[in-house]
Length: 345
Image: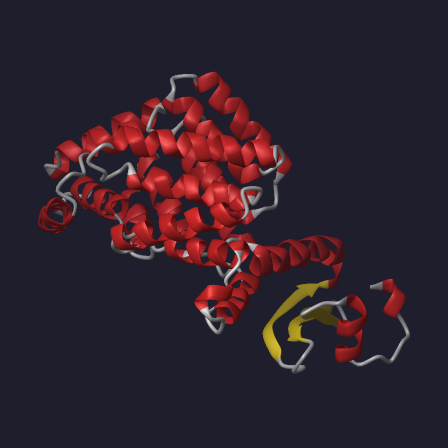
């Protein structure tokens, strides 16, 4: 940034010099005790604005605002469903299928994984398997493929096969990138599934220390704090921070918000959060039914429970507990009581 200070280059020439597809530019305006920071993401080829945000603050919070704007912009642009990923997928869809590379398949696989339906998860596994076939060193593709197998285990006829594939993918992701905070979080869940809660807690601590401002990591750890190991109240704090950091949060963030709220007994907040979660996920239906049941809203709970049984006949509460895995004692108590009240099997 400093090398361009005072120069009058236009954005296209700067883009060519940096070999960049996009530039982030900004401005600061001050009036009295107030100031405004404006940022824009620009396509250097066309000069078009692709995304913009504005931050108004009082002058006594300048340094805190600098940190907040930086964290916010980074998460909006480069999170799993961030603006750059969307732009990348738009470019990919204009390519002939025969020309797709490993990273192209990875981006398309992430998109399908984050829908959380049975059909989309099958497609995610297909796309991500192709990504790691083309580039076995693409750690993030192994990571998301592992998460897709973990979702598959919820309703698979043989969940142990899906779980073994999840374990294998996560271990490969960490082997390729030991510093990946999301892989550390995934490994924490695997440690818990294998009965080592102490190691699971250590992995979560490492992931949080490695990426304290990464919204995707915070959202995933929030779910693990609630359901796997740790203090569910901290899970509530972490998911709220993730939502502040990433105002373009994907739907699965709200699933984590709903889960943490359910475990700590905030059933109304849990139901509201799941209204913004992936609507066709069996986990969404499970927690929605339990939340309504705990609020004594019996007809709503029964209607959702019937849909869950119809659309996911192989899904059971104990199966979800085994495969998530749910190992945190407060979560076990909350889920089993919610399932009993909702009449879920």
